[in-house]
Length: 510
Image 1 (cartoon, one colour):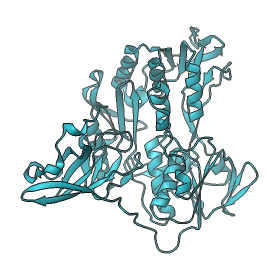
Image 2 (cartoon, one colour):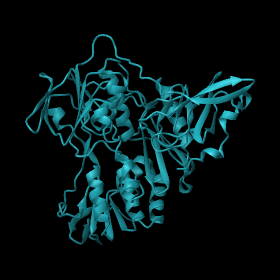
Image 3 (tube, helix red, strand yellow):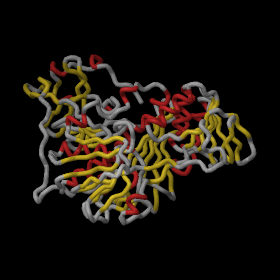
Image 4 (tube, helix red, strand yellow):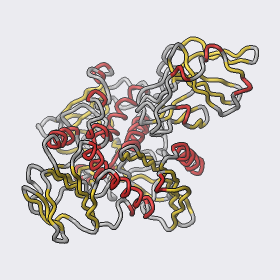
């Protein structure tokens, strides 16, 4: 990712900008009093908002205007030009707004405006008196916050089996594991946020069963919690290795903050690591551990890493990128056994290792939903509004399989941004707003200083077009099935990723 410019590298917008220099749909990055500000024009209207994305600090001026919104080039967060509101995840906080005055052919950015007040959008016909959310990950946290943002005043209970308050899970396998992210970046919210917003966050709260008929949640400690409406956001569980030695203490998984911290502690004394699986998580772990100076072998059964998802050319790029940083691949092989000092591959090859990390995928945590009688289809089946087959119960995140208008199929996606956006939509629909979930799936994967962005969804394809040079980390790959473009992956082309997202949305009328 390119670093944002310092504010004073750009013009002082209080001095005015000639109206003729900014065409409809264009943006200009500047500053006001040393604070980075983005000036944007839509039609005859001019808007000034904070120029830095509140998610990871991406430069909004390098993003894309869509209607009266601006989208971040890094991770596709979306902000309102009029209010500064963070309309769609992964950004949860708004950007500031300034007043713009046009006179004598110039646009002048004046004083900063007060925070935009909450607009209550509760629907007539009643709302539930209480809402319980099971799961404190991306979907559950986003839903709880959105309920309050929408003006809901009823009781909100967020049940999380995790011991830590909601945190930035994508960072756990990236900068945090590499040791380059600060500890305070990891929590999604500061201490006291949930209490201040009337969200009853219960940590270490394990749900044993749900009772749709009685509208109640039974917790593992024997307590029972009634609900008016329920959101299931139980996420996914990592697949565990099933080989001799898989339970040895130096064998790790990476899903939770506790997992990441345990892996960081182990990496402090480890010299050699075997990463089992060339998934995005596995490869991100490999990159993070190489940053820490640990010898890394990646073991995977495929001929090229990520070929099934990204195709051969990008798979070769990923392999070359990691090999350039010292990662060694053992492809066409699996781990047959793990011992105290290393692993034995299915090919018979031994590898020394004092650290083993399994990154062989996850499974949706749907057992509780199935036991409650909800419709199951390789996930929890939901309609376009994220409602399950049981009255008063919604589902979002890694467990939800929904009807996707882009592909014409029911799909389930295990990605952070999708989960957050589903949590936001589910919250509005629990309040009766009837908003379709039509967001185009998006995810990103970071490997050293190279980021791969992916929009759409293509479980399989029959045609792959590549523009540019994957080996140079500069390309756009389009995945087709039956003559229809289903997904786009980009490397080094952030704006093209945004344009692809916008085109998909236009295609489905989103």
